[in-house]
Image 1 (cartoon, rainbow, N blue to C red):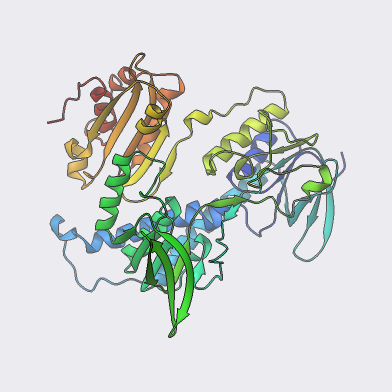
Image 2 (cartoon, one colour):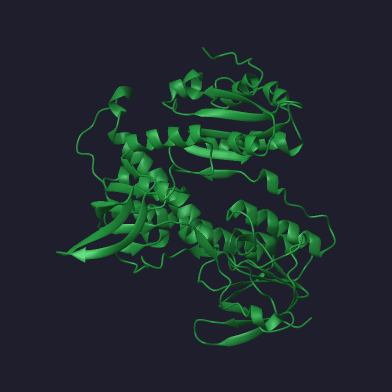
Length: 468
């Protein structure tokens, strides 16, 4: 096999792409990874999941230090914010993880090509490097894992300065006095809270009547109340109409109940979703047509309509989540070599990394009832959990939704500190078809906040031990 001929070529080095490459190498495939950026890791590691979580952590430290720390017998003076240093902490975190991915490529003997990859017919990939140099790679199999980018509103186009996406909102050089966030989903809430904690006035505009609309109403209402306490001003059932400039000021216009509302803004963060990266991929050269949402159709084995070409992650249907892409990458490669790779789409956890965090898996109470399923629900407030009381983590609750007839766990929703970690134990029980009783009888260490999950499972049959 010549130098530029491979068993597997992966286009895109995000969580789906680089994990697929590693799995391919583990299974004995000569593997190449093509990435248009100078660093590996894709959106997630470079300008998405990781930097935003670093900022969330730093801003939480700052906020909690300035709010209620005296209750712990800790006092100090002259608290100040060094935003440049805070940003460097974020950048160091990103650099460490991106470097880690590069190291994994070397240890797994994966050949990395930096340049814009595109299909040029058959199972060949053209790589155009930043210098303009082009080369052609040939592969028996190609996986498209090029991810997604923020959606731009036609009447509120990104300019990178006033109207920004999450890419710019993780890298402001100063705290904006007035930040308007369009969209009350995960990205809008997370970055809105970062800047509110650091001192910005933050207005969140949402077209729907509730925030985090994919969750049950009790979760949404609790989140709204708790985030308001941290400085977010919500404007629900409100439609953004445009942006105007008057007297040197930026004014965002919106409508609610037939009336026009105006918001002065230094920065406008548009966070209304993401779109697949399927442009400029050369799909036409292999007769692949995208759907109405620019996604690449695939079958259960992640095969596209073109022989030898597969697609995973944000470019295909399903939630645009890094862990979903990872599982698809592994399953896709295993299918390529004849193994029974599988992704359980019913059990993909969804997390919003605010404080408290919000996490879910499976069916919520509302969706289960809409599907005509007879359910029983157990709920436990963290205010009744000893570890939560001892660590100022009493906000929120855990909720387990089970089939009334079989007791099988159908889903769960948790709003609490550490919800992203707590949801994993529920996913584990659901993976083997476990019941609420199975979860309730699982021994949890004491004192831990995870005991609230056990209590919620007990509450499904009215047996919670620490509910008043």
